[in-house]
Amino acid sequence: MIMDIFQSFFPIVWMMTIARAEIFTSVAHLENALYAERDIARTLKNYIQREEEKLEKLKSIADDMETHSANALKDPVRYLANPIGAFLFIKRFTLDWDRDVATILKDDKMHQVLLSEVENSRQSLPNYEDLAGVAAAFMRLQDTYQLDTTRLAEGDIHGRQISALTAESCFELARLSYVDGDYRHTIMWMERTLDRLDRNQSDYKAKKLEILDYMAFSMFKQGNLRHALSMTNELLIIDPSHERAQNNKRYYEQMIVEEEKKFGNRGDIGETPIKNEPDVDEYRQSAEFRHYEALCRGEEVLEVQDQHRLRCRYYNNNKHPMLLIGPVKEEDVHISPKIVMYYDVLSDSEIEVIKSLAMPKLMRATIQNSKTGELETASYRVSKSAWLMTSDHPMIDKICKRIEAISGLTLDTAEYLQVANYGIGGHYEPHYDFARKEEKDAFKSLGTGNRIATWLNYMTDVELGGATVFPYIGVKVFPKKGAAAFWHNLYRNGEGIYDTRHAACPVLIGTKWVSNKWIHERGQEFRRPCSTNPEE
Image 1 (spheres, rainbow, N blue to C red):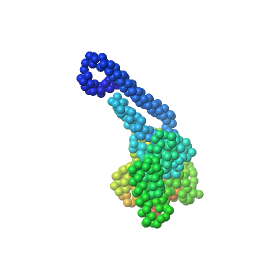
Image 2 (cartoon, rainbow, N blue to C red; image 1 turned 120 degrees about the horizontal axis):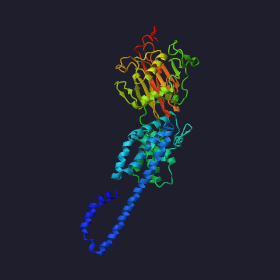
Image 3 (cartoon, one colour; image 1 turned 90 degrees about the vertical axis):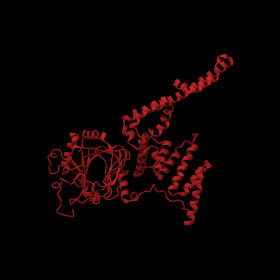
Image 4 (cartoon, rainbow, N blue to C red; image 1 turned 30 degrees about the vertical axis):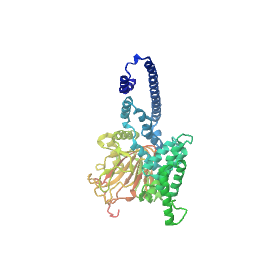
């Protein structure tokens, strides 16, 4: 390291040597050399001190990482399977990393080598795309489950105490919402940031200025001109020379005057209720979406028809050989359309085999574009999935034969077993499993007709959230490890059963694994024949 310093100084030293050659010939010059020696010693000591401070900081960060990972690996679900824990972990290796570690390691060549080695290990760690994704999931969960912002900031999720969020973490959630154009959540989390700011910190005023700047513009984007003006005025009290605030103040005042001219001098001018930007589509204001979110929270939205007819029983499917000795436990969830739950149809060992086979194949789940027929990712379906064939493991074939026995349908023309893992806020908004009339090419490449039925295995319990809900009929099914839900998507005449429109609710706390078989029409001609009644 010292050689690096001297090498960097060499051209200057060499030039000075030419200019001051033969120092030995003068005692006065030799005396000056003593001062130079003293200055070099000070320079080296200052350098050593700075390096020691950096090393101490790196040692502290390394110790913290080691302790955190050791504790987290004892119970990863507790640490990561909640929105607060997931956000803090991902923030740790994006914003915090760039601020604390990368800046230290970018200083010189020796550190660059270390940084390169560490960056290779970071390939498996979260990136900024993950940070944006977990922040969006955070807001989705907050809305779906109506979580109070103040309690969330304190680390309280439905009475479960998680890590509290610092002012800096609240600010980053707000900033990420702002970047996403979500001004409603920007305001919510900037308010929490202000609550949690330490007034004794030296940079308190600077931070408050930045927060007010974000909040004022977000209020404006929400249509709250008077609130935007009020916050801008507050900002200008702290910093009267703030140029952008000065311009914004004039603009807000002008807009309020124009509105007063247009609508009269009413007290509510510039006080439009906060609405969710950007461009909330009409669907999210629909009864279906409200029912979907209410069902996710466990609320009753519709009176379930024929509830008195719902029964539980042991079921052997007309004495099917596989079910004679061990009939399955069947529960009616809904009569028409018929939705049933089967319990203990997957063992823990079978679940572990499925998960271990799927893990290396997991990729972001896609949807089929109804216009183009192409597969693509979508914000309304957030999970990772993998497809397993019966040839992948004897256990998969065994499970498929069991599904055949219970459902009474052949799986020869069914799609592969799809395995899905939902992360924090993972969800799939209301959708149909079958292709509607206008989606003529949806399953054309398979050549097996439409999806006649859906079999859905639950492979984990979920602590909070993650239900399967049917908004049209007010049905909600909460995951139960080893259980499976089953329903037909088509009537016997081939028409779609539109009441089977369903959704996977966001996972609030916990991890959700499911696997499903989409069963197709071809091959079912004698197993589920068409009815003589054309209306059925």
